[in-house]
Length: 428
Image (tube, rainbow, N blue to C red; front, side, top):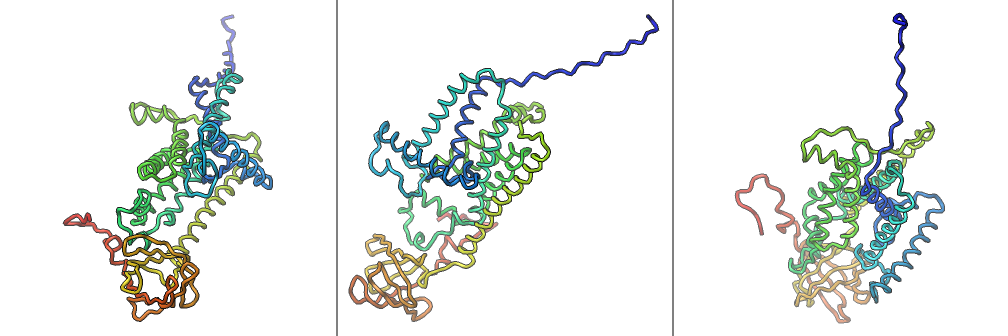
């Protein structure tokens, strides 16, 4: 027996136990799975860069209309029945605000639906160890929802369209009459380089989130950017508070998957192993190839649309602006009870009266004449480069209004510029 060679027995492959998530992890995932799914669906009143239903051909528009119809019936009913909201706040109407009463009620219903789903889901699926596969799909959904939203806002700043230099009407407005939101829009527009910088930060976060390996870094960039945006919205009373808060929470949700590793590296000074974030995988080769092709086409289409649309808007706004014949800011020398006139658009002008009351007026141009409020027609003449004379009828009576053009480029806000060296601060 001593001469018999004993061959080592090959070890049997170990069957790895599935990773078990803690109860708080599973509860949080179930809630946010439902909440972010609802938030990715279309909702009128909120700018949604990515919608699940919008990618469904042909049936998409019909499904979107029916889905929105359901919420437009439910939300006002809840607002009036439980919160006793009446009048216009209880109706849907055209508005540039994302913080309407119905928007808050709608978001509250999202939370309640998610909590209800959490309770039912926890009872029916309490034995499941983890949600790694479903988590990969949810993470993918949130990534692209947030990334494309950041592209929308970011490109509108890289090509400065969201914030533009203060217009003539704003330049004649006393600072004390600015709203907090007007202050925010004006100080952002007063520095186009800073506007471009802030937009580039949003685009950077979006680009990093397009790739799985850089999603955590992109989410951290996006969280920093959106926290600042949300703070500006809250502090300057900009009615996008609800939406910006949700975008910030999306970014937190994404990098929270790596929270333990980030805590070890950034706070506890401990080593951290490689990330084991779940990923969406396909077993069949043709599905993997198709998914890559779809990603290239889908992302390329979104990026092209965002960049091309913003570039066209930039050319129209800055390179080839369509300005009315009276474009400019004027002092009124004689002929009317006006004190200043500001003209920015062909459809209207803003008049500041002698008593400082502001009056917007509709305008229509035809050759060398302008019609005000569809009843008074004045002929435009220019006796010299600095003056404009309007001759015709005003408020039904003959009038000759003499205007002196103000050179807005010499205003301190526009002429101060940038200085590396300042012997004294220019703080006026």
